[in-house]
Length: 379
Image (cartoon, rainbow, N blue to C red; front, side):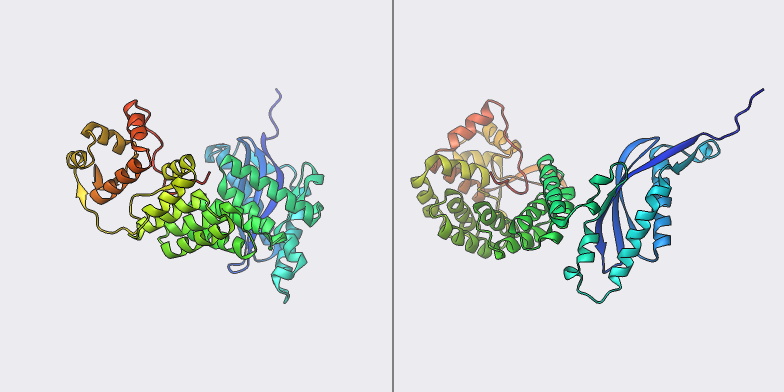
């Protein structure tokens, strides 16, 4: 009778390792890596406390095997039957250990890190074990920069803004004077909801000479939603010196003046006289009638609103449920709440610029419209 003399083994193949960042404050090395295991193919990341290269390497492989075991759904009862190991550990271990040692050495130097070529190299390094020619570490800085920018733009198009920001930060290490990089990082933070970081990045882009129309608008928009109305207005005034009679800028300034309870209709009238359709589009897309400052609201009912605006109650409810009018909900109450002054302003603007009938018709036929998003997207 022939018996089974060897245990079946589950193999892990490490495909690539890439430096995500070196945290000098907390002395941590962040690595991303891609691998295959019995559970499939995965891309993940881990943080290695910077100690000594041997220990850091051992921790990396220990964590990798543990993660692969969980993803492969191998529990304790399977341990005797299945042993996971890294098939290319001998080939991949030395590059990782050398990388860790180089990080330790460079952090121990007295040179300014942002001027240290070795540090810049390490922050943008990576190994591809299946195809060494694809390793970042084998490429010149200019080629790495192009790779990071290309990857970031692809991820942004797919909506993966957090991952895109990581690649942009690497590109920024290689070219820290590019306003485009700062703007793109700002867009990523804006989409993630990190308004303070987005503000910092857009401001840096402009400090480096970015005078693109959308950069002005992004920066003004972030200030608007952070309730920095004076700053937002100043940015748009500067924009109008570069782009005189820009409709979007005029509508945005009018919105800021509305929020500050200043005269704003004259500015909207000016935009409307320059381009009717562009003004209507900008009002529909970006004009925020809800007060950002969080001031006290004069709550009113749908019935009173109907009489106030001369619009049927049913239509008011449709407009409210589809967020076509300024409306609020509170966590402890599902009831839709409207503010009298905000509604009066909404109706006045929409009537004055020939938008009200279209809005009523849109909800009457059941289209509903887009739900309100915290920040209006630029177009």
